Length: 98
Image (cartoon, rainbow, N blue to C red; front, side, top):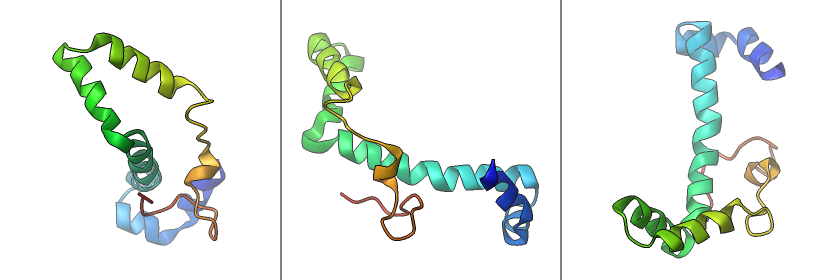
């Protein structure tokens, strides 16, 4: 809730977005996009996303199921929100580390 208040008080963000609602949308996109990109980069190490694509094409169902179970396990993917933060600024990184 603090970030909403900060966005409301920031004249620059409201001017850039045009409306308060659009400013909040832009803020959410600016935070979620780098985290999602980093998550996809993590999952796609060794072309793992190709296995997921094969599920939708209709082949290798058991491999896709196994892959999804692996990545649903916290022991295999020990990712936390703090892992996506810049060590110096403690805010979501703007660039993905690959």
